Length: 539
Image (cartoon, rainbow, N blue to C red; front, side, top):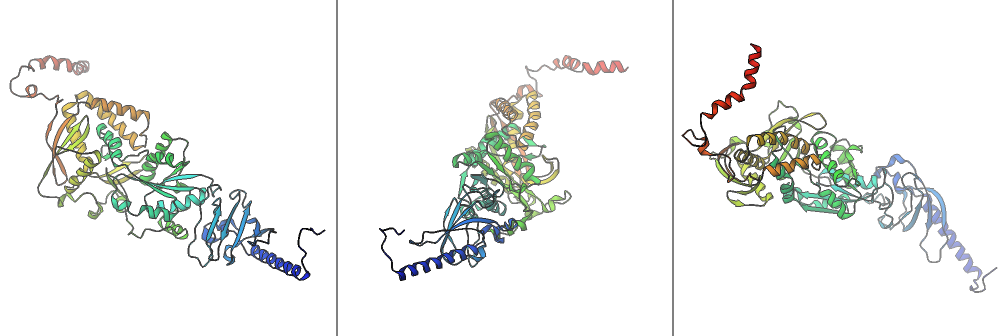
C-alpha cells in the first residue's frame, strides 16, 4: 500500500527512476565483478596468497540511491575502474586479514581515505607508486605489533626493514638513530630517508657524552681489553628509553646472521633489551625474512619504493663510533693478507706520519681522563681530540683474529687512536698508584670484565660488581702522564701522582735510612724455604 504522505508520481517519472536504479545496480555489479584484492597483486610481494575472496558491500555515492549490493567477489586491482567508488571489506583471510576496512579511490587511483589503515592502498597500473600502508589494528603476515622502534642507520638493510615490519607485523615504525660520533655524513638526510621508506618518524639523539662517560670510561678504568688486543665497543640502553617514550611494544635491529653483527652487536642489543625491559618484543628481520643478500634487498626496496642508496658499495663491513672503527670482510677474511693501505679511514699509515714526534699530556682523576695538555675537556670532546692527534701519527691500528661469541674465529682490523693513547696513559699511572697484589688481581678481573662486555652482559650483576671494585681501587689513580707519539708508536716520557707509591729514597742505589740491605738475607731464606724443602726431598 502506498504511503499517503509521499507525492504521487506519474508513470513516466516511475519508469525513469526504475531505469536509473537498474543502470546503477548494473554499474555496481560490474564494479564488484572486476575488482580483485590488492594482496593478489604481484607488486605487493604477496602473490603466493592466491585469489582471496572477500565479502563486499558496494555503495554508490548517490543521495537518492540507498540500496546496496552485497555479494562475494574475487577482486583484481589491475581492473580497478577509473571511477570514484567506496568499498568495505569484511572477513578477508581468516588467519591474516580479519577485521573491517574501507578505502576511497578517486579517479587517479590514489587512496584518499582509509579506515583502520589496513594494508589496502590501491593504485591504478598507470600510477608509478606501489606501497603498503601499515595497520594499527590488523595483523601482518607474521603477527601483530602496535609500534616498533627500529635501530636505523639509513643504509640499505635498515631502510628495507621499515616496509618489511609494516607488511609483516602491521605496525607503525619509529626509526631511532643515536649520534655516538659516527660522523655528520652518516646523519645527513636520515629523516627524509626514513619517512620515504615508510617510517612515521625519526628520533635522533646526541648520545656522545653519555656513550663515552657512562660506558667507554668505565671500561678504560677497568683495563678491559678483550683477548688483550681488542679495545671494546659497547651497547647502550637508549633504544629502550625511546621505546618507552613513544609507547612502542617492540624493538628491531638490522644485525645480520653472521660475523661481528650476530656474534657481538645482535647479542649486545638483545641482552640489553632483556635486562631493561623484558616485556619488549624483539624483531630481528635477518633471522626471519627471505632476503639473503644485497641484491635481494635492492629488489625488495624497488618493489616497495624504498630509496636505494646510490653510493659506491664498500667491499668492507664497517662499524664506527667515537671510540673506534672496525673493518671486516673482503681480503681480510684470509688472515695471510695484509690490509690495503686505502682501507684505513681514521689513521694515516705510520710510514707516512710526521717525521717529528708529538708530546701529549693526559690528566686523570680516579682512573677517568679529564684533560689533554692541561686543558679540561668533556668526555666526548677529549676522546675526539685524541682521535685526531693519534690518527695523525698512525696510532691505534689493531689487526687480530678473535674468538667470536658463537665459537667461530674471525679476523678484524680496528682503528682506535684516542683509545690506545688513553689505555697507555691509564696503565702507566696505575704503575705508580697501585701495589703489586692489587694490580695482579685487577689484571685478572679485567679479563673477565672484558669477556662480559664483549658478550653483551653489561647489565649483568657480575659486571656491575666488578665495576664497583674497579671504582674503589682507582680512587688514588690520579695524576698525569706524558706520552710521545711517533709513527705509530707510543712512548711514556713522564708520569706523576700525589698518591704515588714510588719512593726515590727507597729505590735509590745511593745510601738511605728506610731500606736496610741486611734485611734481604732473612727475607730470601724464608721466601725460598719451599724450594729448599723440595730439593732436600729429591736428594
